[in-house]
Length: 162
Ligand SMILES: *[C@@H]1O[C@H](CO)[C@@H](O)[C@H](O)[C@H]1NC(C)=O
Ligand SMILES: *[C@@H]1O[C@H](CO)[C@@H](O)[C@H](O)[C@H]1NC(C)=O
Ligand SMILES: *[C@@H]1O[C@H](CO)[C@@H](O)[C@H](O)[C@H]1NC(C)=O
View 1 (cartoon, helix red, strand yellow):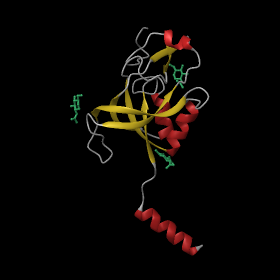
View 2 (tube, protein in one colour):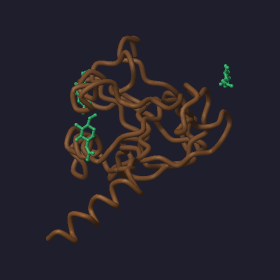
View 3 (spheres, protein in one colour):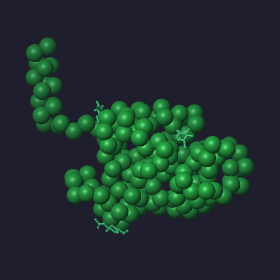
View 4 (cartoon, protein in one colour):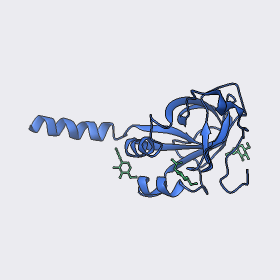
């Protein structure tokens, strides 16, 4: 028991880092959009914002259902290079986002390549302008071509009339 405590102490001192994940948000979780505050509550403060970014590949960003909900369809090569924000989140926040996005039932979490547009800050986690970064993103795997008939957007704004 004592050995375990000492080992735990050493690990904590030598490797104080907790695992963190990069997550790209493109819809209602962005700053100024209706669900950003939910992420703040889950992060118990401001989530760590790293950069504005844009998908390297084109993806269809569509507005699904009458509730004005954005979906990035997992169909690379169609639509636009989509704009959003990269956050650095810990396990607690990632678990919250999985639940919030009803992953895997409603949205599916995959990795996507992003081009960093405008980094923020000078901290050690800062991403370089113009660099390519992989991050998690919540997408919709479509089962029905009807989704592909919808208009596509390069950026989501809940306040814009569509
Ligand atoms: C994640 O960060 C929040 C504070 O922002 C904290 O309450 C929580 O315990 C952290 N989770 C992990 C797994 O470190
Ligand atoms: C986010 O906010 C919108 C309101 O614009 C709401 O309709 C939606 O269900 C919320 N949740 C998610 C997961 O997008
Ligand atoms: C990053 O690039 C953007 C243009 O895409 C520019 O406005 C911004 O000032 C740059 N930021 C830094 C920190 O170099």
